Length: 343
Image (cartoon, rainbow, N blue to C red; front, side, top):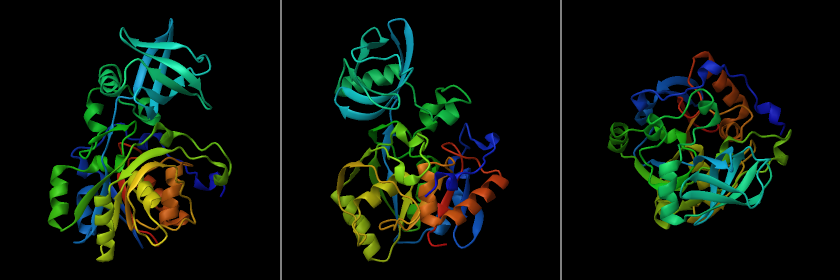
């Protein structure tokens, strides 16, 4: 399909630079046969006993580092872990970096450029590994807010809490699974009171999720790969839910992409431990997910293509037009939507 088909105009003032408080006070656009305005706190009304909510329990790490290559300033954003001491990263400025260059982040923390890849990407080998590397990131790194937020204001201490879900357990993401940012313990108690179960999966969201689609046709786009994990216990619970007539409600596109990667043609979800580069566009047949909760996405992005596949491109364009007119807040810190397919 033509990438231009997924374009729309968004006023800059609708890009959220902070979340609302409390989190469940955010708006929730329910897209079914009709399009209705609600709030995230209303979510339990749309769930049924026997449903399962699938969350992403990945934890965002301080993956943005600022250092010096000799006397020149360098900024790197880690996005894919490939070893105990090795990461793929996006670098600024990338053109001046060469294999063998050393980037100093502190007196005892540095990385060597071991390889240059396409698109401003480099492979960094650090002088620390494992737990020591993670401790160094905690001391020297900052939360890698998406470009559409970091261009509006600097990262601050509040973002350490705001850009992390209450489900965050497994360190490794460089971007938050943003649909999960709306949940609070109070909302979870109401959901559980409805007889709805929750299951955790892990997909370490990479910075590639913010990369623009630079081709004219979706067939020519190469999707970034991300590491995901679904345990046998989680897969068994998901399959038991569907067998009993319950619905699988995916909290976020990250959980959905992982579930669809792990499902066979019969809709059975299998344990999964590896990378996925699944790219979902209109025409895709969904096998594992019945309902999707997700924030509002960038024009011409792979995620807007995904929601267009889930609900239909005409329906999603109609929904986004409504959201813009009703002044919903967009992107990571913005409002949310609840999508029902075939509507």
